[in-house]
Length: 491
Figure 1 (spheres, helix red, strand yellow):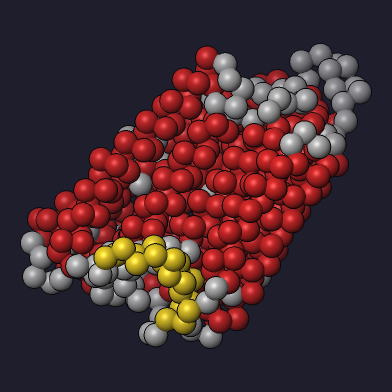
Figure 2 (spheres, helix red, strand yellow):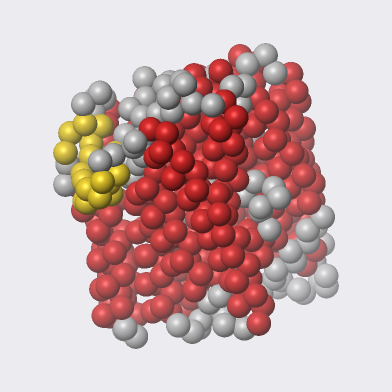
C-alpha cells in the first residue's frame, strides 16, 4: 500500500503542543486558560476527524519530520489502528477540559496552570504515539508521555504525591529504557529499519532470524511498554491514584494506559505480525499470560473500599482484554481487542468522572460511606451504573461489543481456557461493580440525615460524565464506526 504525504498529521500533533504554550501564556487567568485548552483540543479533534475519509478509502497518510539514517526517521503515519486511538483520545480531551475546570475550581486546587500545561503536553505525547510510523517515533513520544505526566501524578506536592510520582517515573522509564530500547537496537540490526509493516500479516523481521532472538525481542516489547499494566509491572498504576481525579481519568482512559496498550498491540501486529506470532506460537501463551492479570486484578479490586483504588485495579484488568484479543490472532479476537481501546476509554473515564463528582460534592472516597448517596446524586450514580454495565460487558453498552468479539475470538482459536477466563472475569466484574450501584441507590446512609442537603456536583462536572455515559450506550447500539476501523486493520 503506497503512503500519501499529508501535513494534517503534523497539525494534529502540534495542536496540543501549541495549546500548552498558550495555556502557559494565559497564566492565572482561568477563563482564558481553559479557552486555550478547549481550542487546542477542538483543533486536534477536528484535524483528526478530517483524516477519517482518507483512512476509510484505504489510504495510509504519512509525514516525515526528520530522516536520521537509512530506515531510521521521525515520521508520522495515520492508518485504521491509529485512528481508533486518536479519535477517542482527542474527543475525550475536549470533554475533560470542561470537567477539569469544574473539579479544579470546585476544590480550589493550586497550580492549575501547570496542571493544564502538563495535561496538554501529555496529549501531545499520546497523539504522537497514535500517529507514529516507526518504533523510534513511538518510543520518543511514549517517553514524552511518561515525563509530562509526572507533575500531574505528584500534583499535590506532598510526601505521598512525590513517592507515587517517583514510583510512576521509575517503573515506566526504566522498563522502556531497559527493555524496549535494546530491542529497538537489535531489530534495527536485524532488519535495517524500524518502520512498521504496512499490514498485520508479515511483520518486519526476516524469516531467517533466530526463533530464540525473535521470542526474546517479543518479550522485551510486551513487558517494556509497562503502561499496559500487565502484572507484575502494574504497581505504578494504583499508586498514581493520589493525583487529582481528572489526572486519574487521563491516566486510565485517555492517554497513559491507552498509550501502553496501543504501543503493545502496534508492535505485536506491525513489527512481529500475525504470521510470525503463529509460527513461533507466541499468541495463546501471551493470552494466557495476560489472563493472570485479568483475574488477579479483578480479585484485588473486590477487596478495595476506596472507590478510585477499585477503579484502578479494574483498569489493570480491563487493559489486558486488549492484548488478549490481539494475542488470539483470530479476526474476531483482534477486532474485539482493538475496539476495546475506544469502548473502555469512554466507559472508564465516566467512572472516574463520577468518582471525582462524588468527592467534590459529598467529600466521600470510601464505597462503604456512599449508602443512599445515589438517591441524592441520581445523574452521577446513573452514569456510574451505565459505565459499570459496560465494564461488566452487559448489553446494550459499549463493553458488550468488545466482550462479544473476544468470546468469538476465543471460540475461533479453539481455546476453551480463554473462554473460561472471559466468563470468570465477567462474574468478577459484576461482583465488584454491582454492590457499588446497589449500595448507592438502595443502601442506608450512616445516619438518617446524612444526605439530606446533598446535591449533585457542579454542572461542569455532571454534564461531561453524562455525555460520556450516553456515548457508551450509543456505541453499544451503533458500534459500526470503531468496528469498521478495527476490521480495516486486518485488510
